[in-house]
Image 1 (tube, protein in one colour):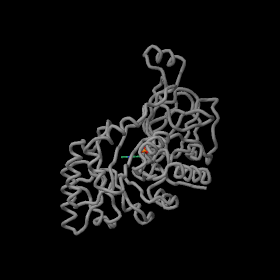
Image 2 (cartoon, rainbow, N blue to C red):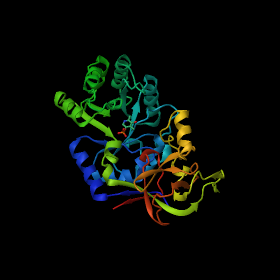
Image 3 (tube, rainbow, N blue to C red):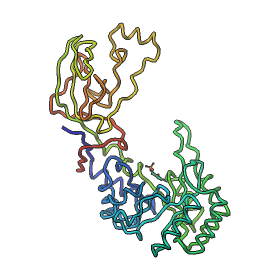
Length: 365
Ligand SMILES: *Cc1c(COP(=O)(O)O)cnc(C)c1O
């Protein structure tokens, strides 16, 4: 009765292992809904991979990870004075590496460390073209002075780059230039000079860019933080299925559902598992932009002209239309006469975004 993420285990694990072998210094990212797999499972997989650090998004995610993975825990969202303290979450502060994106926060964190009798471990974030978090080069120069005073332990600098734009037929512009421009800043250089282990934590560089940077900067230790292309990089190993729960033949004009809509033609109302609580939402209606086009298709009895919206459920090789907006745990689809009607209990494919879906079960073979 559920929405299930099915994983071809051997294939998935081979991809994870292959990615870790290809990317020395890999830092798996385990955040949010755990990319569909859940945080605990990703933490155990990171342990199995043998990496030394896992990144979480939020402090609140640390408790889901810290007992399943025994290395360092990098928190990606920048530390703020109001951030939850690891100790308060039951997590050993010594394992936690804080991202710091503002000078004031660096001073406050060092102050808090002094009060608690420890030196917080920090990665200083340099703002990039992404313009999300981080310090300018001038601010990093001041941060370097603070680091030298010894209130914190420096674990490197971080660069969060935008995703390369998808331009079919064109090579994506390289991030290498931006990374090298930022690295050359005197402030960033001053920060790196305070540590023997000059580590650069990066996001969204591809394999070729990392390889180029590693070759050109052999003195730096590169730490790629990777989520999507690690956990979800082998799509053929992943499949999402829903179960057919009921099927009702309807005539044109029969009413159904919470909204008592009437069927625009003969067909089947198919009830399947998965609803709003799983993150199944309404997608854009299929095609047919203009009113005139809609009127024409309406005259032909077309379903999307009748206001039906495309669903992520696939039956007979086609995305089917929602008969009405998804309910909390089930959805109703409309199959026109002539479409194959699956049996109750049969499993059908669903195409959903893994990062926004709450699966009832994850089955790894
Ligand atoms: C989420 C996140 C990542 C991982 O992103 P993916 O696109 O899933 O690989 C890396 N770095 C930062 C700072 C992030 O917030």
